[in-house]
Image (cartoon, rainbow over all chains, first blue to last red; front, side, top):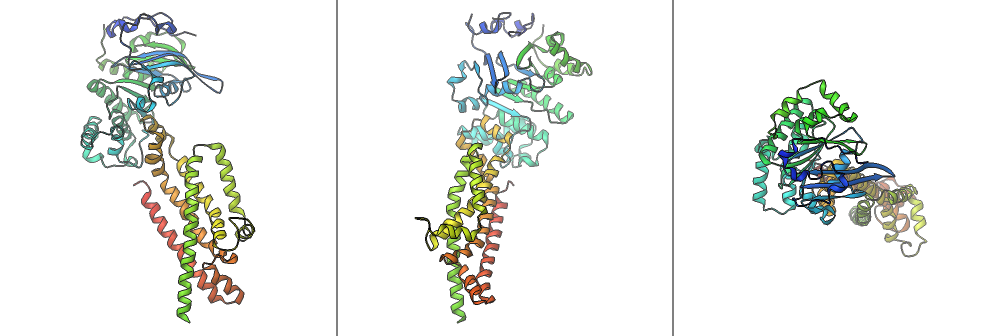
Length: 296
Length: 205
């Protein structure tokens, strides 16, 4: 059951050992004991989800702390997207709890909860009948910001994701390339400055060069806006490049939770299977070096 | 004599138009909300579309005949004609409303939910605008078909341009038939063109 592996981890100190209080303990206990520290931004506890008698998620416990990027890595069907969707209640978990900003998800109004989580999906999910500006402005508009503030925010965001506002503001999504759509999607997710960003394989359908551009943009934005993110991918290179920590899922269960460097040395069969894909090309390492991750 | 014909053509055309307009308005008032509701329920959807399909397959002359003896909605005259025309108009409007709404890209709907839009906001700001071209296409199909079918209303005393057609048939007088058929055809073409224009306007830029 509780095969969550917390490898002996020197890095955890740099993140603050307090939030790692239950290391080595069983996840089911970790929620209840020694809670003298502030909650992590997102706390997932013993989360399970089954559909038609089939278990999709099995007893998953995971914290996402302020400022970090947790990458959910796994094969197709491993449950990583399902797990992401339980966080913003697109899917209701069968059992277990999720706590966001210290409050149980069940206590949140789902509409309000979702507006505090940006969401970026594979093909952008842009509204085809709205201009880029209207798409980016959505959440601020729902939150009834004054029009001037919205216009200013849109301009700021388009610039931040590398799209010239004058050129792109009035365009419709069908006149955007795949990479441009994803940039708009990211701008839309950031619009109302939500504390948590959810990414569901956002770059999977892009060509390799555009993908690399977008991955760099992601790192750049994280440096500038200090966002917390939960990021789903099946691409080990992407995981290595972007993650503060990698949560490896296998058949709906958490197989391994480790920082990229520890992940390299991990010895679960599933981790080895993913690492085999990495060995063909070591270039990802250079990218993770770029990161200003605290190191020993 | 000629001006008599002209004024009769005008008044029957207006009568025809009114009948069609009322029938389409009622059918739309039923089929549009029904389409929206049924787009959320795949189970009842099959029954409703099945019913509308069956209504569509009844030969129109026979349907007018069936309705005449019925209480409330039956009898001789316009009311019965309008009921029959409504039944015919339901299917294209219902089907196209359903197609339009269920055809909204799943990723678009998912984004809308995930961005924190309420169900009502999603319906009015996302689903209906995206479905609008399809819905108008349904109205167009229904209107054009109804303009043609409404000529049969004259058979049960409903009036309209069918009056000329039935009179021409009984007198074996082609020009009288044309006096009914040509305005009806012109009306159908105009409705088709006008609604097609609206449909194009509503399509995403």
